[in-house]
Amino acid sequence: MYAWLVGGMIRRGYAQAVAGQPRMLKAVTADDVEFVFPGRNSFAGRLTGRADLMAWLARFASLRPDFRVHDVVVSGPPWNLRAAVRFSDAIGDDYRNEGVEYLRLRWGKLHRIEVFVDTERISAWESRHPELVAS
Image (cartoon, rainbow, N blue to C red; front, side):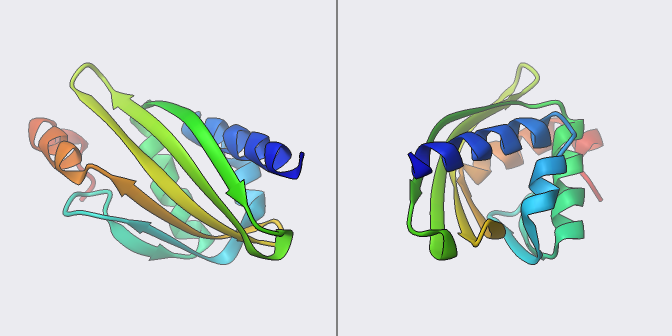
C-alpha cells in the first residue's frame, strides 16, 4: 500500500512538473537536491540545489514535451526510499526517447535524481533545432 501511494504521488509530481506547474515537486525537494543528467547536450550536467532543478524543469516544460510515466517502482523505508521511474518522452514530430530516472528520498524529501536516457537522440534533436538549445 505504501509503495502504491508513493508511486501515485510521484506520477502526479511528474505530471505537474511537465505541465510547467511543479508546486508539489518544489515542496518535496530538499534544498541541496542533486540532479544528474548525462551526455553532451544542453540538458546535461550535475546540478545542486532546488533553484537549479526548478530552472531545468521550467526549460524542459517550455518545450511542451509529451512525457509519459509507464512504471514506478518504489522500495525502502521512509528514511531511505528509492524509486525508479520508467518513462518515454517526445517533442514535436522528430524526437522520441525513453529512459529511467532513479530517485532517492529521505523522510519525504527528494535528495537525488539520476537520469538514464539515450543522450545521442537528444544531441541529434538539438542539431536539428539549434534555436531551442539553451546557451
